[in-house]
Length: 497
Image (cartoon, helix red, strand yellow):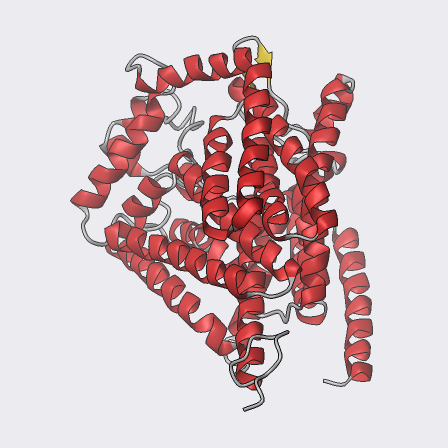
């Protein structure tokens, strides 16, 4: 496409967006606004995909604030903003369907498309066999493939080294921003703090004993704890592979990440970031830099533990309730046990999408909860469904069977292996930082998925999937460049022969 034609299409898109928004405002209904948003993001993903993906990332960071400023999810605009990420996933799926037939893009989509399709077929087939209502089945399937759809959408975009440079800088500065904004909001008046709170959520877990938990710009401390751990993964990547200026920022971002995890009072990132760091240092670190990064992390972590010992003790005492049969959090253990029972009883396909452990099973309360006695347990009942979405692997195994869970696991492991190759083969610092950071964020997410639906939450899925897609695209570009240069790595002189 010529530059002039592309500009004409972009101008036409701007006009179309303006008309759609005017129509939505005139109609003033949730459906009209949501339809307009869907069409807008679809146009954006086709005309300016990089900008559209960046805007969506900013939106997901500020979603709670935007929804509350619009009057909350009870108003048409607030509810549309609350569901905008769903419109974005639909638009991303449309882009994938269009580009999957385009010869330059199809090869890099193919393996991930096959895995996603196999998983989708298993969960859908089991849903039909188990007579799951069509709307529940469709919603469950939509949520289950949110992560691979975002990954595939990122794979359809031609990312270059300059994009990686911008993203590397943004991610390195994001850690300090999240911590500083979290402190400011923490100290702000209650009316300011309420702008970032989702009042529809159950608030019991916002603290541990007498200690308040920081949640920053997000609607829950768990999201804040994960977010600062995610930035910590990119801080480690910057320290291992970044330029000198990036390493300085990376050290500050790692400090912000450790501090943010401790004040969030969340246990999952407290375990996940050190394990992801250890993996990253041993896999990608070399020589003196490897030991320098390990020493820095040990220093920051040790200092943080020393300063936050009372908070950690409160977290430990709270964790004991998970093995206490009379404790309030025993429902989470029951979800694991029941998920395994369902996967075994309905081997090999499972109970079908929308039937266990996901949002669809809460919205249309699953009869399996009655069948297995979970509906009588506080936190899992229809009136108090606070814990029903607190698992991932039992949820996947119960709905798509053990084969479906195996496909998903293979997808994640293969992604980690491919992006690790990119990190080890890339010659430019920016691509290496993105590839290492994306790999470590995936490792961190897999650890957190032991006790939460990480890959089905919009912000989590976006933040993990899109950088993985960028790294894979850059890896494909490196291989193509090497092939054109006769197999000689880019940046190295060719031999006289």
